[in-house]
Image (cartoon, rainbow, N blue to C red):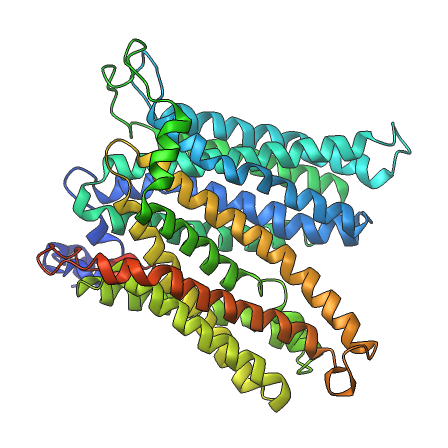
Length: 478
């Protein structure tokens, strides 16, 4: 019998679902093909994130000669819409439509916003690089700002409504696994987009830039249409125009005034900031303080990604044993404290091995913390406020990450300049001082995270509570 014949006759029904990636996240009402198709909206979001925060960052500064401060402002503009994710989620909860859809219109309009921003972006960037030579001096800045704002509004709207849709259609017992899968697909989309953009723009030209960005706009629409097709069941009664609707501000006050909700959001903000301040500093630290090469510092990305996957695996095992998500978030913060202490010590000890270990542990702690807060936020998505709860979590996480990244760079520059000028004394006159200050601030933020999450972990344990379904290999990609 040929090898192909043997493969065809294998009875895959006898294979344990734990050995099939994502299989345990599926259910009778949400089979695996439908679930994977739904996850495509996260791939489009990941592609947009890589484009505006990674690829265009380098292209605008190096190839197009745009001043770095303008690039920083443009990249920060999408964060303007991050705090509005709670409102977007709430509006999708309360949407009125004779068609009977709540989430589909928001995902679709978010897709159109992404498409519009990406469609006009290359021409705005060309005007910006010309510096007003071929038009008004303000045209490039205005056009680029509009493009980045549209993309930011689109990706935040699409992701918020998409996560709410996934929570709506997934059975209660499998919701943590479904949303974890969607989060992993976001990382997969970012990785695939980074590799694709790198290959397509290797031979850079203005025409190639236009083709790549507008191609990304078309791919965004295709992915999101495929993701939405026949996903949300029409329910005209739920979206009837004459049905009473709650107002946003009273509903938000009730949600925010709940001690558990408020404390979880504070915990998310502190922990996200604690893990995010180093995002733009880890590789420069390795280069300037430890003298690592470009290739060696680039490998840190793989270490962080590997550590994150280890964090997912550990969270899978611990949640499967019934560990409270809040406790799991505390464990993630503890791992982060140890990781940043190791990274800080790597400089004075001139130890690249310690540095690599610390970088990997940062990924482990961050993976534990993200999954823990995500699962805890899903527990708040009851009583018809799915969009509000997930939108609030996403708004806090995105805003905290953006502010922390910007603050980390600014603090490193400020304290680094003071140290090298001798203002801090001869003992603190090296380039490592600026980085060490940021890492110590991150340690303090993670200690504050433990303080914030402690009461949740202490008071939400219920020994009679049915534990979450066991996580396993199915939560992770092949």
